[in-house]
Every structure is written in structure tokens, then in C-alpha cells.
Image 1 (cartoon, rainbow, N blue to C red):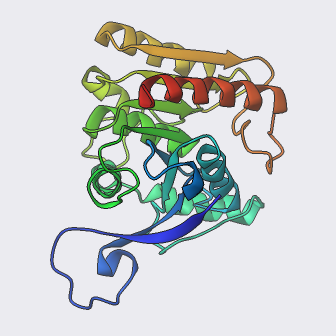
Image 2: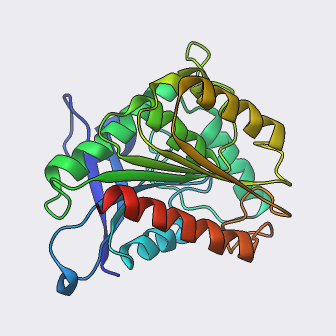
Length: 259
């Protein structure tokens, strides 16, 4: 699929226009779209990374959405610490990703998603006027849940094994679960019964809060699947669960973004 990297610029003054990363208030994003032969305008899906950054796997996820009629955009959400880390799956990579995640703050995450939304809805011609969904994996699933509570302009959200929904990023912030009543869009969740974060008990807690808030949601628990089951580059990859979750995700977005 045709793809490119774009710098998303934040509002506000900048001292040097050629600076990158947090100092220049820029955030790089990977964008993949269907070939021009298939049209000029499509709905969009914001793809939220795992702790490993917008690496080759996340780029392939974007390309897969593009092959099915969406513009997919994956913002590099660690940009305040590193302009665009692309980690692998070794123990050292895992620790580096945890270090990046540990300094994230929810109000900054919401800002980053809103900047991405503004680009998709108002600046990128292939998606102007189209519907926008969001999907995320691991910490990206948590960010997807948070975005569903706090980022106007989204039409649908899919969270894959969203760990830490029950805890805030930033001591003075509420946990995403405590904002559940703000969710006004349909929400899908993909979970593994062998996962410890979120555990099946955590999923039950999330479901109870969504029920109390009257949120429309569709959660599925996959038997024998653990955390990260969607990523075919990780030892936790579970092919059967990954393919079924993909089918559910694509059908969900087709229903809510293409109609």
C-alpha cells in the first residue's frame, strides 16, 4: 500500500521551525492509504502502538487497514522522549518501551490524539469529511479507551487487551475507567483469558462500569490467548484469536465508518 511519514504540528509558538520531537512540538506519524486507483477519499483509522513504538509490525497493521479501504495513521506517541522509536521484542526493547510508557501522562496523550484527529479531519485531503475510528494494542488499547472518553470526533473504537485501564497515567489524573460515562461511541474489546493485564477479573470490572454508564460495547474473550496475541512477531502470538479479532474489528469499522 502507498505510505509515507508525516510531521503533525502542534499549535503554539516554536523557536526553531526545523526542530523535531517535543522541543519543536512535532509528532511524526506513519500513514498508509489505498492506491489512488481505488478512489480519492476514504474513512480513517487511527492505529495506536504497543510499547514498542510505530515499528514494522504497527506499520503492517496500518497497511492491512489500507488494503481494506481505510486511511490508517499511527502517531508516534513517545515523541516527548524520543522522536520516533521503533523497538523490537527483546528484553532490552521491552524495558525501553516500559521506560517510555512510564512517563506518559493522560492529558498529553489526549492532546496527541486530538492533534491526530485534527490532521485527519481538517488537513489531509483524502480523509476530509470522512468518519474516523481508533484501534489500539496493549498500552495502545488503554489509550484507545481513554480516547473514547475524551476525544470528540471519533465514531468507533476497538481496544485490544487494554492494560492499565484501571490506573491513571499522571498522579493528578483520573483512571480511564472512571471516565467511562463519557463514552458516547460504540466500543469493541478483544481479550485473552491467559492475560494478566488486563486479567479476566479486570475485564469484568470494566464491563460493569460500561454497563452502569449505558455504553454500547462488544467484548470477546479468547480461550488460550494471552497478552499481545495479535502480534505475529511475539511469542504470545495466537493465530486463531488474531484472525478472528481482525475479522471482528474490520466488520465493526465497516459498519460504523463506511455507512
